[in-house]
Length: 451
Image (cartoon, rainbow, N blue to C red; front, side, top):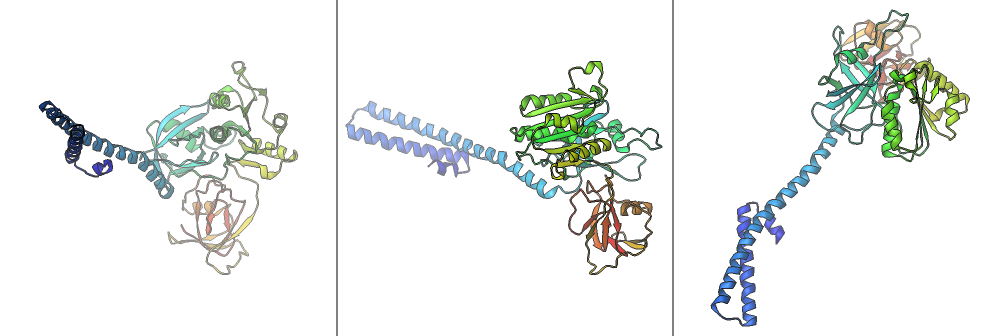
C-alpha cells in the first residue's frame, strides 16, 4: 500500500487517498469490535465516530508527509550517486587535450622550489594518476613567439583527487655559460599567482610506481628530484602501508630542503617508512634535521638497505649517473632500477618501421625529403640537424615539444610515410604509426609527417 501511495505524484491527492483508506479501516474495525462485544449506548457511537475522524485526519497527514519524504529521499540518493559517476566517465572519455586549471594556492617550499596547487576551472572531477607521473602544462610567456610547453612531476598524492600539485625549481642561468635562466620556471615563480589560469593535459609518464606490489622500494633523490618520490611515498602510505620504504634525499642544507616537515608527518603515520637525509653543507640551525653529512651514495644506501628491493631514482645528472653505476657494480639488476632524468641520455640508435610505403628506399646519403602533409610544406634534409624537431624549427616550423629527449611524448605525431631512426630509446609510450620527432632522424629518402 505504501508503494501505491508513492506512485501518486500529487501530494494532496495522496493525502486524501491515505485519509479515506485510514478512515475506512478505522470505521470497519470499530464496527466489528462493537458487533463482537455487543456494546450499546450513545457514548459508544460517539467514541467510534471521534476515533474514525481522528484516524482519517491522521491518515491524511501521514499520506502527505510520507509521500513527500519518500520522493525527496529518492531524489537525494540519485543526486549523491549519479553526478560523480557521470563526471568520471567524462574524464575517462573526454579529457584528452588541453583543459584549463586555476592556481588555487601558491606555496614556497624552499629557497628555490615553489608549489602550485591546480584545480579544474570547470569544477569537474580529475582522474587520479600513478605516483611518479607528470603533468604537461602550457604557458603564454611574453616575448615568446609561441606558447611554452613544459612537463613537471606531480608532487602530491591524494585519494580524494581534488587537485594536482606541481613543485617547480627556479632555474638560474648556468654559471660560466652565456645561457639565459629557465624561461618557464622563472615565469611560474615570478608571474603565476593565485587565480592564474594554466592549460594542462592529463597526467602521463612511464616513470611510475606500482603501489600494490609487496617488494620493498628504495626512493633516492636530490634537489627537486624529491617531487615524484614524495608522491610515491605518500601513495604507498595511503594504499599499501605494509610495504617497506626507504627514502633517501640529499640537499645542500635545510634552506634547500623542500617538504621536510611533510615527509616527517608521513613517516609518523607509517612505521614501515625509513627516512635518511644527507646535507652536504649543513648549517648550525640544521642540527637535528638531517642524518648524515655529505652526499647520498650507494655505500650509504647499502648500509641501511639489507633486503632485495626496487630502486627509484630522480635528481641531477651527475647524481643519477653515480647512483646507477654504483647499483650496477653492487649487482642490482637493471630490471630493478627505475629513473627519471630530463637530460640527454647516451647515444643509442633504435630503428622503427612504420607508414604506408611498402618498400621505402633507405637513405644512402644525407639528402632526404621531409613532407608535412597538413601544412603542405616540403623541405630537403641535409643531415646537419640533431633531430627532425630541430630541423623543422630551423625552417620556421614550430611543433609542440617539451623535454626534447623522448620522455614526455609532447612532440608525438603520426608518421604517414617512410621510416625514421631514434637516437635513443623513447621513454614515452608511442602510439603505433607515430613518432617522437624530438629524438628522430629520417631513415628513408622520403618521410611524411602529419604536421
